[in-house]
Amino acid sequence: MNIKKLFNNEAGVSPIVATLVLVVVAIAGAAAVGTIMGSFSSDVSDSANVGDATGAASTEILIAGSTTVQPVSELLAEAYMDAHQGVKVSVQGGGSGAGVSSVAMGISDIGAASRAVKDSELDKYPDIKTHQIGGSAVVIIANDDLTGLATYNVTKADLADLYINDSKAIDGVTVKAYQRAESSGTEDTFVDFIGDDINDSIEGAVGNAGVLAAVQEDTTGVGFVDFGFADGADDVFIMGVKDGSYEFGSDEITADAIMDEFGADNEYYLHDLTRPLNYLTNGEPTAMQQSFITFARSPGATEYFTEVGYFALNEIA
Image (cartoon, rainbow, N blue to C red; front, side, top):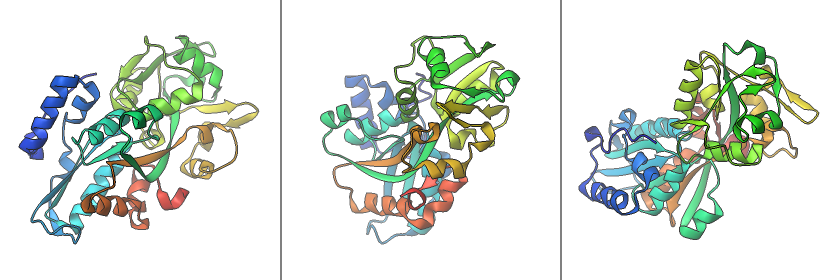
């Protein structure tokens, strides 16, 4: 996994945070934690109004983790800073695993994960608290040049052959599979669906954006990303899915169809690959953390989830 750079000076990382990160990386060699300090979002560098959640002249919140949650976090951060002068909210990725470890180690204020916290993580970090803010779903994408797959309904068995057994074809069509290079809620959801771990020979790319770009650039490319990244993306199509006797064609995998699957009592593909979008805190949230989380969970935040192809909590609860 590539780490672009440790700090972005524009983010104004405090000496305390910088020291913590260096110590953690030096002692633990935690690649995922190193990644979340790779670059701060330039989209959240502006400050605006004072909020009643803090009496300090300036307060900073660092959100880190899931690259699925990252786009909506950036929009939420901008909107929150517009309403709270003196508060700076910085957002970065690194994967869901990094979201868990970074908040548990005190490197980030709020972790982000596009999945539930695992039992093994709770065993290691028992103070982690989960705050669901919304939901999304994983979809399978293919390069537009794979016209032979455009109307084909891929099955779990096809995906297992491709990702577990390292097959080079789907239904006789030659393809190249891409997976995630880092610990990822998107990959965890996909692995649960196909029933086993992905073969180590499958090439990885960083984040949803990295997998999308790899598939866009490779005329034989197939991958899995969050629906919000795939919907409307150039040079790729969402593959139709056949799950038992039930089929979802490509044109049926829409935001409305996915939203209908939240809480549904069935075993259809879209139901199996829906997942929560979570914020995490180390113990009960502070007043400032709670203020931001409450904002993210509020009906007023729905527009920001819709903008990036996700579903706000009030839409799926």
